[in-house]
Length: 448
Image (cartoon, rainbow, N blue to C red):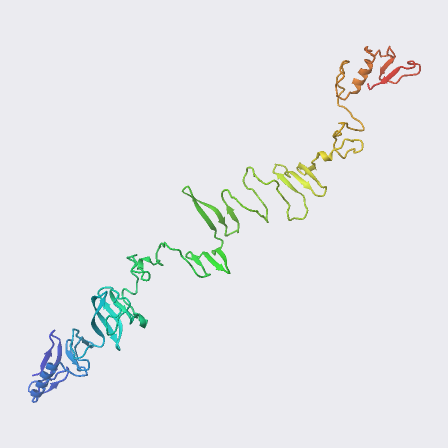
């Protein structure tokens, strides 16, 4: 009858036919009535005693099977895929070549460390505390003179080898930002590094040592770049504005805005300019009010060819009221609705109206007060001049002259309507005829 061989967990290892031997495992398994089972059984017992001691691992091992690796002098266990060291300390006749327990001094105080040696060179020191070793400790290979001027708490690498840890670890692949206390000037806590994935703050100056400068925005709309020492602040998004804002009493105001769609600049609020203001385009005030200029002169037309220039006041007429300098006439002119005339100065006037008929305005002579005209027509006759009035400076009318002649001599002579006036003074509307008057008489013909 065949044997069915089971493992501890009940799974079947193999079935052995009567009179045969099975080599499914690293041990020989015997069927019923196998004739040579005694030798094989004893060999199995020896293998178990020595844990299959050999330089080669057992064939067909089972999970949990032990094997003593004679090349490494180490007991190993099969984990289902390969034989792995079981761990634990092991003794040997010579000192290990990798780790060595040493006692060193720091300010004459003993410190116990574990030193890692590779090829008789100490590459690392493991210590539970930080210290500065004495210069001659240990006496065989002093730490301070051989790459360990200081020893940190934990693992310290030999500084003369330029040694570093290579590979990844759970902690080394990320920076611990939970703390901000630095252990030294060169060992910086993770919390003191600026974050790239979140808003952050720095208490130190931020330097960008590259002409490419600073890029801001999800589309890098704002750039601050340098070229040959020149700085450019740019809004790179098409037709979008660049604004500078301030907080005025809790209200956000944009005193300066650059319009991306037009290229125009908008200044909001009072503006103080120290130095000259040069405008190559036109000046336009879009709000009502008074423009105050503190300079002694306002200069217009600078840079243009010689053309008329002046001041325009907007009115409801076709053309606004203007005062301007007429360059073709070389004088100031004023008016409105396309009707302009010369603005007369004192220097443009004359006291000789006879010699400057229709060309100049009149003024009296600066020294005598006289005025010369060809004729002077008064709009009204005027009132009589009293006999006793010797200081009236008004120009007499024709009627006043006639009245004065009537009063000539001290007595009033009235018109008798017969072309004769007693007392040899004649004031008539017609000329005298033959036979009228006597020698020495005065005849005055006046207008009707």
